[in-house]
Length: 103
Picture (cartoon, rainbow, N blue to C red):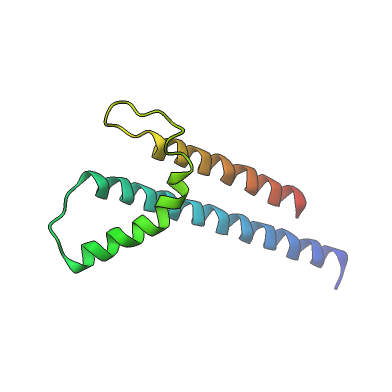
């Protein structure tokens, strides 16, 4: 294998890793949106809805808990999910640039 082949493999690995990070963040942002929407809407009880609500609660609450209590709310409106999403998107950009710079 030549030097150019190794560089091509590294570039492909970096691109794949950056794509993974971007897709992971996009899916997590969608989960946060679903969590927020389900907290606003009261669905009739069903096993599927309860399971979905429990899953979203277990996945999103730890991350959102980092921002709750530190971000003041505007009356009944909780701004912590908005700040959490912005921080997640900024972290995605930083990680993708670091991956691009290192590999």
